[in-house]
Length: 230
Image (tube, rainbow, N blue to C red; front, top):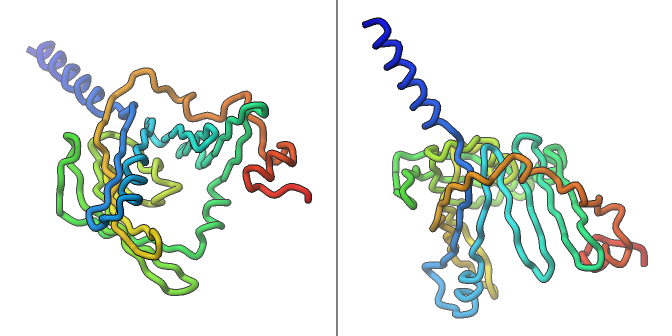
């Protein structure tokens, strides 16, 4: 009988360990604006579909903005790295450390109000979080709405750059954007969540062939708006 209980205990622990395994995979977000009828703005939002690769405390997104751009947020090392892959030049990166990010946002204060309101997004239960954003220099205030889940098993440090201190991962954000002098609500919602066993920790490291943007040729710095000698 003792042996039987030991076997059951081991099975329970094994199931528990499997259930707590952090999610690794792809999350696709699509944006809409419920209060905007401007066809240009609506069309622009329709083209803003974004696919994030996530695991643990890290996320990565690959974009094409005329050139290939990769953004890697590494919550373990607390770095936010932007990598430009430019034909004829190669890869150059700009890395922002936690200290640099905190310095850049020193006048911004975020307060999180966790509510009991819930919503299911692509099969995951989410709770509504109201984010009050205060500009400490001007006392201007703004508000964002997040729908946050803790069911993916992602680390809280995944938010260190965008929502430092937030508990859980936002599968939907509601914020204001200005377009042609008018302000509209923009809702970005996860529409597809796909586990991917091929995602690994090395996907969130700086590529070995990328060079520091400070060492880029002057004409490249001018092209990307990074200064350069006149």
